[in-house]
Image (cartoon, rainbow, N blue to C red; front, side):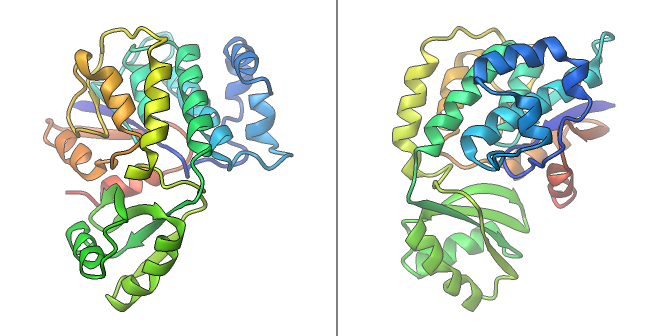
Length: 280
């Protein structure tokens, strides 16, 4: 059997996530609080200041909960999976699981990533439900909305588009006219995974120069390439991911080619489990 762990990204956060993990891994949580400058337990369990949904808080919170879930799951027996993958932010948990960096280094990376991405304003994203990705591209082209990029190829039934907010707002009517099942604007302020994130990508690339990374110990399927990380590509994959689409369909198709696969979502919710069920 091929055991595959997948880690969710932004959108899977929920108040109450992490639960008993914060007490189980109290020393790591204490270190995380020092890096962040606030209590991660309070953010995840109480969210009194309503910040959990803000990108610069969501990313560290999900990274920590995903990582602690993984550590709790694998335990002292070191029950590591055969493959790992993560959706957008979740890829950092896959890299952590694969030994590319330690818990705190990963936290520093996603903290910076969130801070950079939250500065990218004026953009928008929307989920297009019930239309094949190729048809979506054709609709955008025919309506002269080539300023909009494909951000997430999540499943044959779900694609996320990304662009300037006014374009995302305007294109809704175009998709409804084309017979789309649902068009759902996402609660984000930036056009993530698109050409509009190139400045953010450059800033993050500069930040990554401060770090050294370890070789991959478990195959990690990259969002950027939908293929296993090569050690020479670690920095490039992390950088390019910010402005390029999450190729989730191809990622899961690659993994499903392995013998007798068993997928398990490591983190809050079942968003990825549902998407995996839609991919053949």
